[in-house]
Image (cartoon, rainbow, N blue to C red; front, top):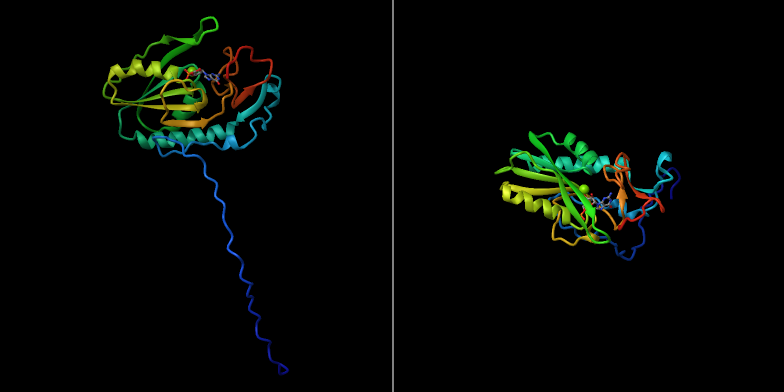
Length: 236
Ligand code: 5GP
Ligand code: MG
């Protein structure tokens, strides 16, 4: 090379690499009538990874779904409901008492004209047999020709919603859609599915965010698992 000449720039030319196989992970498809995908991210974490806040540490083993995740998911559900029921004559029917927190947060996010009513249902146990249901509050609003969104805290065996649907259908609503915060598909005995599901959870007994054990723990701002020794006769 002559003095004063710049050397030619070296072009970086990597050696050809063998093509790499990419691995994709697919979640099993979730059958849901709506386009809102079911949030299952909490299932990827170890179930007992989140410590409850100090006041609850003795009674609550772990947080299954945190307050922040509840808020995010309920907001998404509200958006979806708003979209699906826009322009409809909507009646929201919530089952007492477990829906209190979920319903209050959900309603705040649904900016549509709507009517609200409640049905009271309570389960009781006869000896060791399966629990029965008693209706503690009847529906007051007319639903004939209207769109009904039935809201419950958790869909477990499906007995409660099956009984409630059997009461609602003869009232001739235009359609009935079901919205639940939690779905525990492992224990289903009735053929009933929800159209809107907050979280699909494993076969564990949960409390908080409206859900109780002996009428306690409804005020927990998260969904948690009871500590051993607190739950006496809970069949998950
Ligand atoms: P299903 O009739 O579907 O078996 O149960 C529905 C009702 O059982 C819910 O509305 C709720 O009151 C109660 N339930 C079912 N699983 C749980 C649970 O894990 N925790 C609590 N606190 N209640 C539950
Ligand atoms: Mg309930």
